[in-house]
Image (cartoon, rainbow, N blue to C red):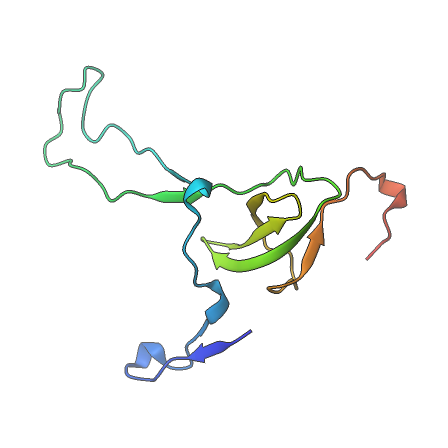
Length: 125
């Protein structure tokens, strides 16, 4: 993991650092546009509040919260920040997904989602 330090040019950039592994472009099939409200229009579509034009398109990443890829190994390709850390995973069956970043995981680590477990079988960490 490489950390780049800012060159101090203003008081706001003193002791600033950025992690280089979080810079990545999102995959096109794993993002979606977050629809905004009616932009000043009523139910008929007529503008009722003036000066409410188009906003900047906001794109969100689809995150796999369920982790339903069971007993298939995946490799962490990138770690991104959106507005929390997420990992881009290449699974063994060719599927690619985003998941939340497991603490301590780095690029190149292999992860696996366990198929089924019982509470009393899991070791205490």
